[in-house]
Length: 210
Image 1 (cartoon, rainbow, N blue to C red):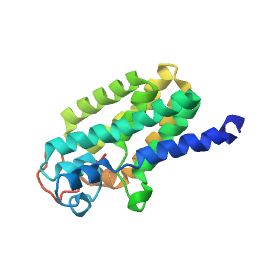
Image 2: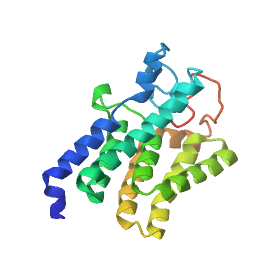
Image 3: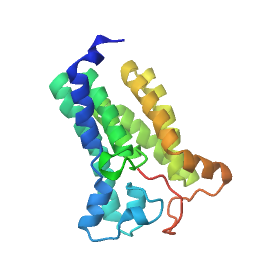
């Protein structure tokens, strides 16, 4: 075991990341805007796709930005304090915090936006790669969940090719966790009843919440 992971900084980095990642922007923004509780509609998620089901595109966009930038903020803050290695721990914590926020009984979003935000903080070209793959797959398939799954699966390989080996290992783990978080979406994709991007049904199981 790498002795650096036994240092107090490791715990501090994870906690900083987790607390930032667990901020439920979707829930906060919709409550401030006076909309219904997003956990009572659609998939019940706090992510941007469910926020979009309120009909408030601006709130959905703000949720994506908030959920992404909290991951970026965690990485940058801890990198400034302790360096790159601990910044990766913070990024892991931010992702876990978004998916399992303590404030919401560990029932959060699916992690796509925070995944991108952590990428942005650690190696921004990979964030652009992820978004490019997402846009291509979404344009061809109209499935948000499939787009996120494919982009996340290809991201570790891209990082490896760019010789970002440590970051690649982290995102191999995050990609696995993201796929597990999307297991219901994967089942619907296999069964052919996953909702497509632009589905207007508020009760559709559809797109992948962030």
